[in-house]
Length: 402
Image 1 (spheres, rainbow, N blue to C red):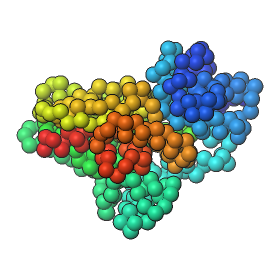
Image 2 (image 1 turned 60 degrees about the vertical axis):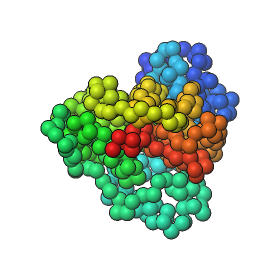
Image 3 (image 1 turned 90 degrees about the vertical axis):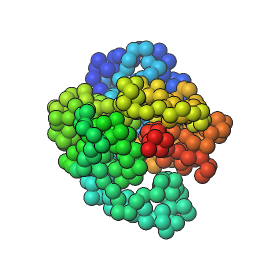
């Protein structure tokens, strides 16, 4: 059969996999199930079969694609540099195009359309905040349990978009900040820490008013046309800025791949910098203070920081500059099971991985864990004991230097 979208896996991408199997131990779903179809190699084989007309694009194919966490740990292990994350997004886009009645249609509408509306996100976030305050979330299960694990959501819901912040002296430069969707509403404390650290280094920080959701969640759900639309809008919103700072690992990874999604996306992709790598660079340049100390703190690597962007040392350097000693929770960087919306759409698999990560944290014996991604923080908070704190590394640093 023929692929029908511009983002479908290409023949070169499909043929780049040499079936060596080195990806298998790195794949969380394969390790949990032992099923070849739950491995990167198996999923690529299914894509090849459908692309070659040897198998139908049916419900079984959709299930095989949908079980993937898209953690991209296989890319780190792959000797052939197979672009598996991009292929998965394309394959899910084909499922959406060929099977518009698939069970994932509700998710595609939510993450492709609704999450791009600042008003709707604020209203939904306020509802979650009210449920937290009324104690309704803590007595529920599934999504409600995840809501209970969130940090308290401020009401009214704050937004960074359309604002700017100046340093105390003459700015040494201007950077743009992605305010995002859930980051803006649920993790404003992270934004504040990042903004204040950048101001301390001498930067003027601007959050362009016409920006929107980065589109990562839409791309992961196969809502490829919506992902492209969101990327095009952000390409216009961030025009003219030398650096675009992103403090969510999933968002920075996706925006670094914008050349795949928007006509003007390459110009954005080349200027995107994850907040961790930028702050670590500022520390190296001597633009930020360093605190001495030996406070132990756990470090959990989000998949889209460690595997998609290959950024490992930066958050550890930031914690070290905050007077902390990073304690490795999982040197292999196995996915915590959050994976964007995966913790809501595949709760059983997600919870299995979340419990593994919680056991690793308990084994490390730390009271604080640093994780620079909102989904990971939410997942960890839902599984670790209440007395274990989960925060962004830059929040730890700002708390020490302010």
